[in-house]
Length: 197
Figure 1 (cartoon, rainbow, N blue to C red):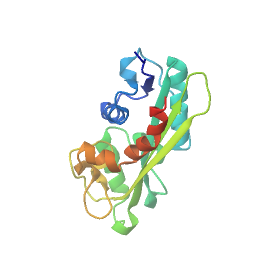
Figure 2: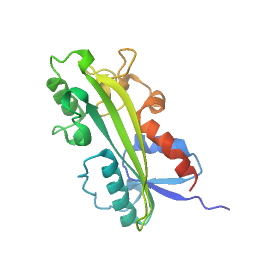
Figure 3: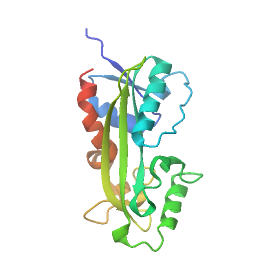
C-alpha cells in the first residue's frame, strides 16, 4: 500500500480546508492547524501577499516538520491606493461587518466607475528545513458596491460586485465562488505541485 504524502494547510478555516481537499482528492492527506498541537502563530509583516504567505508557510513547516501550504489574501481597492491590501483582516477592529462598513464609509461619494477592486491570493508551498518556496497567485476583479448583499462567503464578499452585473460574491454558492475566486484560481495553479508530491 502506498503512503499518501501529508500536507499541512496552515489554516483553521474549514471552508478553505474543504476547498483544498476537494482539489487534491485522495492523492494527498491534508491536515489543518486544528488537527495539530498548538503552534505559535507567525507574524505577518510582509509588504506583499506573497511575502506573508511564504513567511507563514516557512514558519509552520519548521515548527511542525510537515510540508506546508499557506495563503495570504486580501482586497485591493483602486480608489484607496490599494488599501486595505495586506491589512485586509486588520482594516478595522471587530468583525467582517466592521471592516466592510469602514470600506463603504471611505468610498462614500465615489462613483461606480472608480470603485474598481480586486481580491488577491498568494499560496506558498514550503518544506521543512528551508528550500525554495513554490508560490502561485490568483486574482478576481470587480468593484465595491454601495451596500452588503448575499449570505454566503465571508470577509468583504458581501460588498464585492462581480463584473458584468450587480451580483456580489456573497450571493454565489461555494461551488460558484470557488470556480472564479482569487483563492480558487490560486489553488488551480498550485494543483500540479500538490498532485506531484
